[in-house]
Image (cartoon, rainbow, N blue to C red; front, side, top):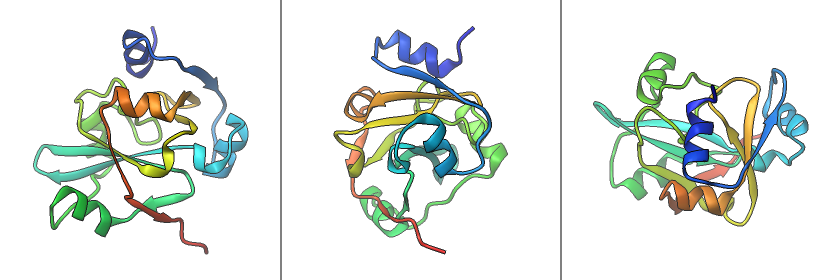
Length: 156
């Protein structure tokens, strides 16, 4: 039986391809095994706006959420990230497998504007499995708000 993410993609008749790979320890490693550049490994971040109020933020792999930009876009003063149990309860997915496709609740989606026009890879609801999909197709299917909500990944 396919993951809820794959079932949702199939039900929406979206064009995608599955990418199966083993465990990865970093975004760079994920990009290598998926055969894409790091920015095309999209992180799906669960953000908590309030009690039982979440959203998904899709960020390129080489960028991080800009909390001031995201708060301004949403018109709120406070946002947080749920712990692992909270993320699982909000989405039906464990961290590392989270995707808006097939989530237990269809929370709103915000996609960083840098994703447009690219082929991206997203988690597919289970470890070692990703989907490659045109970002514009995913954005449209998810009715995502597209905005500048990220900053470059800080260097160490």
